[in-house]
Image (cartoon, rainbow, N blue to C red; front, top):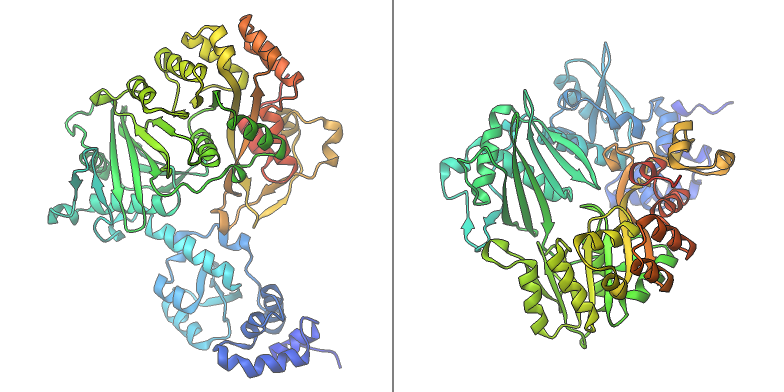
Length: 570
């Protein structure tokens, strides 16, 4: 007689499939009461089967489909909201989609008649169950109900401010003191925006007016994501409240303004740099969030290949000279330099930094924050640092000839100087310093190492899959068409773990130009950046594009990130 799983117990189905044996089923039956779990969950807890095997067994026994990650990625909010969040969380269910005659509901316990009856009374159409794994359901509930809570339905956002704003003079701006203000919808909305930004590790908040609504976007892992669209009627209130918190002129709407807010939450302290600019549709607010907590990076966590790590570490332990890290805003320059300081700090060295702003706090390091409005400029701070007996100096950024000249003088008088500069690559960094006004012989004499860097997004490990590049991909990435079939390229399809982006986290790509004797001579002779770059490549320098290609071939990042952030040399 053939085995029919629909007339068998779950344990019998699992044994028949070879996922476990009779003795393991007996043990699970004895222990399931202690665990307060069903037989399948008990088997998983004991390590005898996997969740995937349990789902397969339930699928065979109950003749129900299994919900996949693709099923839960793009659920409409209107469908999810058919089941109230408390009911969904308590009973481990989520609505997936609406069919003509039913509502498809994913359940971890599809045999529970009580839950089924509750859904029947609650939903506008009869529920039809599919099976879903516990982990996937938990991620789905968190993602979709969080999205509903932070959607355009701003009236659902309740509660007053969870933080205290402090200005540059450490004067508290507590918006809860005025009861009417604390209950205003715009206060609740701004509270919600900042809370969600801090929780999701956002680096920048964009609040911008459109023709019919306000668009709120968070920059996460280097890419902007739209998180909510409040009514346009709330926009002026959001801008005004932001101005109050950052001590800006509320009446001024025609000129750009820059401000600062220090936020103290129950979890962490966050420094917020505020920029407000007038646009044709109204004022746009951009807030940069800087975590003032303990610095948690090391050189080993930045993404250096072994060869790059050895070169960089060699130069940061030299007694004098300049090390420059270049790249655009948000490319991780400050993180790299602070990681370097953390690597080399010891009791025998006096390390001083001059920054605008101080992005990371380091123990045993003297950190000075520039405040230009009171006359504490980079140049003024650096001149004072000269009298502080420093061994190592970190200058946040070379902005003009005066700061560049002081940095050069530091390096030529026996100090090690770390600094940053905005430039496209390592060779362009050298010519950029000369363009600022520093003579080539001083640049050549003081420079030790120039490193250009970028941050590429890492492919989400949960939805990583094989990818066959298109013809356009191959051309833009500069890949030899003859070897394409030999490559094992990856891409993220998008899942609940990565918010359907296909990426999770970032890592660095690097271009290290060591200023050796032949490079130094080119600088003395006034060579252009192409000549310097070619000589550096002959010396063994790996370009940013080559570094990105290595990450791509290793399956760390995608070909799309390579194309987006670098380009192949012609």
